[in-house]
Length: 149
Image (cartoon, rainbow, N blue to C red; front, side, top):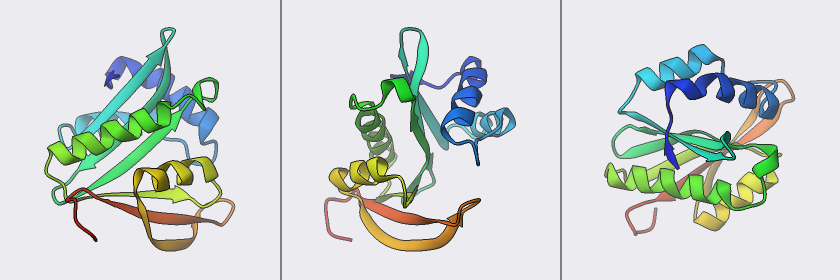
């Protein structure tokens, strides 16, 4: 696993379009995210010279936010999502965040299960958040303090 580089952006844009056809980030969005470092922190995992997964976190103080996380179809089901998430949790904790927040589509069962098994708790549901499709967003939080939320 390594930090995201600007040379990754063309490949990430293609992968985004494949994984998130309705709301993929454009290359301009990725450039803006890179420009927001060090507050924004992104990692990439490569397999066979190709991007197999990526994830990013906003390190905004007491509350950090998962910005995005994705695993290429060919790399799914091998634990890469967990490794990416663990890296984001580690970066948020190292930045002294008390909580790590995220939003996940209600219809993304594998991602929701991953977050739940990692200890994220459902805080609220944002109805019809993802468009098109009227898909609800589950807002989840992980307590990084070791206490209860």
